[in-house]
Image (cartoon, rainbow, N blue to C red; front, side, top):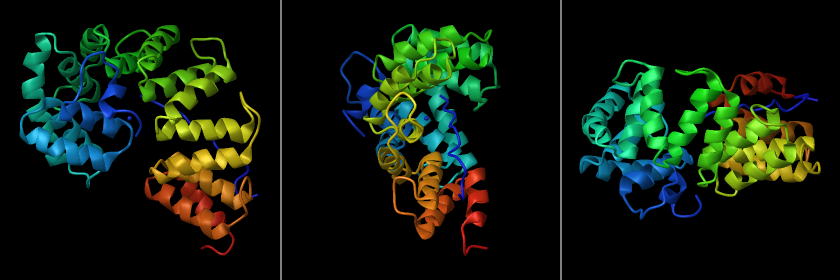
Length: 297
């Protein structure tokens, strides 16, 4: 076998339904900044860029923050640190005073900038303060981020049970990244009793919304018969959905299925194609896998 097993995936804290609704706020939506950021978090980077740019030029701080992330991470546009810094500065200038007056999205942005060290000095403890303010208002994005801080012990004592509690709050708002993180906690028995059936249920909720990381995770569960009957063809189907959205782990896993003829007719050319796509994104196992395909150098 070219790849002896499909590597386990690790998910961290970023289309179906109105995109902005996936951010988890029970109020009327429609702002372009909300739509742009939701698209970014679901991996629809082209839409995120298309929606964010005009809104950012009009002064929408969430759209400006979204543009900053697009250029900072090179998702939806070529990476450009200077351009990212420019948009982050614009977003912070508007968000910080508004956040101090209680606006939850602004509070999340300031918190994220502290957590990442974007413009502001990296300070996890300050990030926690801002996240908590936004999370307390029901903002699912901040609830998910707060869960991640508890899970990793960043700026706060590590507490996986508390992480689960925050992931659950966000997941119940239908926030796909939180649903995926909650699924992972159930799969690993972190902060909660291990329950693969529950893991599959949460992965599916996020996967059905088009969230690529969850689609890959669900594929892993089908491929290994964890929490659901083993079904290699169904695993391939979910890997393909994720891979076609550009998810590197999904691309690698799909390549492995083709290389090994699992759930699909063995096809080294197709395997190599998917491995190369994943490798282009820096996936180390995919880089190694390419050299093991017969006929490749």
